[in-house]
Amino acid sequence: MSQNPNRRRMRWWMPATLIVLAGGAAAYLRSREIPFLEAILIGIGLLTAVLLGLWYIFFTGLPWRTRLLLVLISAGFLAGLYFGVKRLSRTEGSIGGSGIPRLVWKWSPKREGAARPLILEPEAASPKQPAGTVPLREGAFPQFLGPDRSGGQAYSHRISPWCGSCPVTLWPLTIRICSWPHKEARSGEQ
Image (cartoon, rainbow, N blue to C red; front, side, top):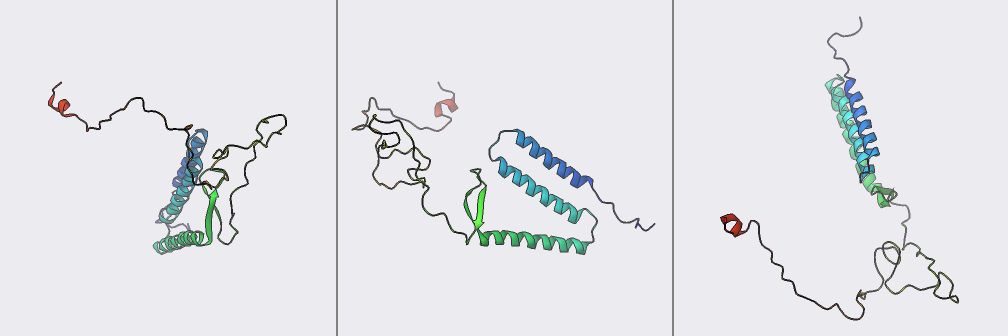
């Protein structure tokens, strides 16, 4: 008889439904081959956490003063987390190439310089010249992002893919750009 008959009951079906929906969506997305899967799963997790927090604050029958206090504490925590991460960390690449930024402390040393050059083992040019010593032509690099994997090239001259001279024009083509629908199509004339 210690229960207050005016007190509302907890609505446990709401968080249970949220958790089941989030788990089902994550399982379904994992079974599909879609781009940006990791970012989508992180978004589902964050959205579920926010919705569970809102459920606890507004649908559990807490007194209004406690609700206001929880909202202020949550907003302060999220703002502190955001500004703390922004002020104390920097992005350095991504996690496994997935596009999710890899956060490191601002005071940690930066990785300077380009990556080590990729040494390939091409076939030997002749029996006298061992494999791996055949130089590549200038401007040819088999690794990603350029010769030193920095996304740039050290030389400034342009390499032409044409041998000797530019290709010969066989026929000129005039391209006319017009708006749709044509005047003739609107008037019904053919």
